[in-house]
Image (tube, rainbow, N blue to C red):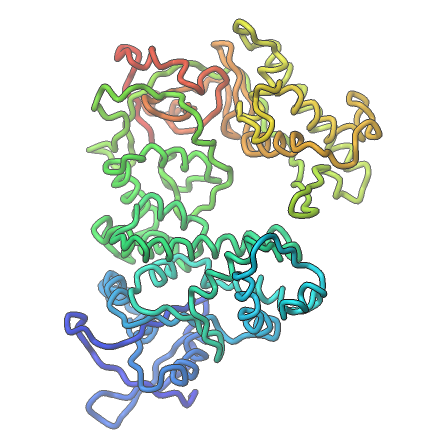
Length: 583
């Protein structure tokens, strides 16, 4: 055996026992390490198998708080007994709320992680510095007692906030619920939670992250979001957090099993939303909670927008978000006002079917029909991080083989021309419009540029962007030498960001009514374009082949000429609305 001995005792939370709860991650580890459990009331003992993380934590917990009573789920809940898990896990919210404190076990540190922990005190002293401070040279590092540029401690800071604990679903409630102390234990190092929060704020302010890549900054951003939730929850003393918001925020967090994407949040969002039952498949749990949210949440319509942008639905209905699936596309911005009308009617526009669990009912206006679609643009890579202020947007020039670059450029150019020709052939111009500007505005979803407002012709951003992208490889654009190596203006970068948000992974289409737009990858001829009263964007629906009265949700769309409330008067006319069924 391991030589580690523990005692167990049964208590009632109603008696307010004195204990500390342990928060840690399972990391898909098997329970194949033995510890000795002393039998209550006798001198005997029996062995219990635990994961490596628990085995490593126990000696440090004993040294950190001698003679302290601990609640550790792997020991206090029989993980092999599904019925016991289903009865005990609903109590975990009370456990973490009742605990005198919570200790987070982060594991044993390696040398770079230890260097990062040692660097925390001098980094925290930077909080008192005023004005701009640029780190990134050994002289400034020495001035403030920081590790040198070459030190592994900087990689250790990346690794610290990249540890699995910061990115798991269950750890959200374990961090947000405690009213007592919350401390992190990394080997023998004790770190207060507010020290890590302050460290993240210092990184955001003084930007020593110049030494880290953009991806590594995202790791810290994810951790910062968790700490900000903790600070807000404690400051506002909110008893329950918004269910839809929490499910959305935690969608990209990880769990060992899919149903824990919901079960791991119930203590935060409401225990009565769904019953914990580990015998139920994840699809059943997701369907149940999505029906509940659509029926009871004022932003229930945003659920079908989320379902639009996931990579697949599996066995779920097309309108139902799979909370175990990451978003494959960025949702369209909330700036649009497609169906916005004055709230003159209390009639519901979206509700779950009372008789068929997989169906959703909606009242909408079928305003147009897709007549042709151009598939998604070929991949054009990503912008390269150069510094905090500057990016290189020659996006497709990482390929070592020149012929591959030329082939990709030809594909991108062909896609652009196919979309533009569809616009010329099918778009019905309105007063004051030109084909060029309508097309250019559609590719960026008619978004406003941050520093270059749409008072500036969108064609300028379009031509700058495509010239920068394609001029080395096609004869149809000016030569590369005619533009600077890096654009001084943010216009090209802003156009790319807007273009990528809307067009990457989506199809371009034209409609029977003379409109153009950008919709889901699978958009095809015959699909209907539907507006919902008070919906922010149009949706594309498709008749089910086996039942034309039932539709499949294809997804949300940008349709030029429908995004800013142009159809408000039509939506006010009840005669234009029909009841649609989604499955």
